[in-house]
Image (cartoon, rainbow, N blue to C red):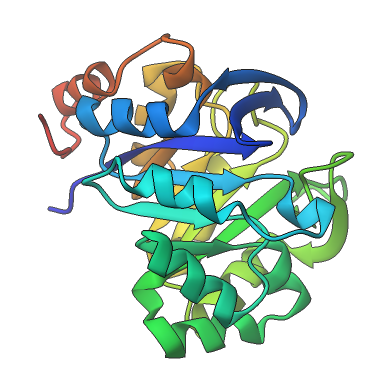
Length: 259
């Protein structure tokens, strides 16, 4: 049985980790290098580093901060934000990232997924999806947003399930599904959304956005079929530790890497 992964997420802006609600109202959470070292020692399975305003501001990711963060880790590091080309991906991998996450640039140029997978292997290419529920008929539907580091993002008129399937066909090796509606609310993940995507693709799916309790994590790996859970506030502000989360899941029959 494959173990479920717990992944702290560092949303970085201006060289500091920040956390908001629905991508707005951000507050400072700490230094990314120090936090990376802490989570590595706490037994996190992986770490995600997002430069959350790089795409919205049309600039490159902070390479020096990424390199310093990678130096603190003995676990896999995924880096995203402002990556627009295969050359950008190469720079991140050389700086110490194990995987690169593309979001806005992939929507604008889907062949970037294919090009990255051909250059570095699908295992290195993570599709980040920022998703909102949309009103309509009786069935649930979700839409992709980009440039989410500023003013709530840009609606793309792109169905999230269809986009996930297309990205995997192009070579994405993992998908991070971030619910904008749930982000920072601590009200729980969008379990239905995660389950729909998990059922639609044959690559690992990481749930993101909404973790407020350990039960939320259990729900999204059991009912939502997530392969991993991404969380920020619940860990950054000391609500729970990585160890507590793993013991909670393990006690309920979920296979995790205990430390």
